[in-house]
Image (cartoon, rainbow, N blue to C red):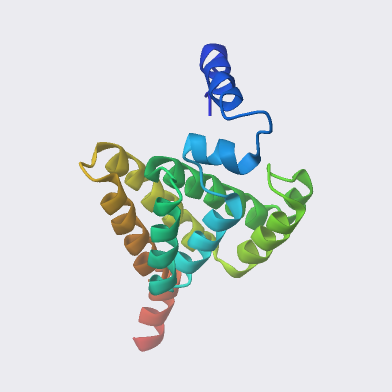
Length: 170
């Protein structure tokens, strides 16, 4: 969260210490506006499988718990990067990716079900959406539009499949 800045890191630690004697992970996540990694994985899974009611309900739940839309997009980008690495190099699951063991297993399973073109499209959509969420007058609405785009683009056939279909029809 400090992005490599010692001064920002110390400031964040001061804020955390002000929370009380016993500081929990949930308190720090709430203070920083971060979403739980497993919930971000749920959101990505819902979006990439076209389960829009579930994705929108989860977004609403995350907003109500104080998750920051920009941090959510960054987390989704990080997850897509992790899934792409796991798809390309399945042995990478042994590196933990700053995730719990269950999350790594789940991510490896998801990576195996997604194609590289789908993961590439997802990366591009999220990367473009990052600046949209940063500049939007309503970041929450921009994130919702981004997740909707991600879901509908995930259903689009891969260019290689389209070319194959066109060749078969000729």
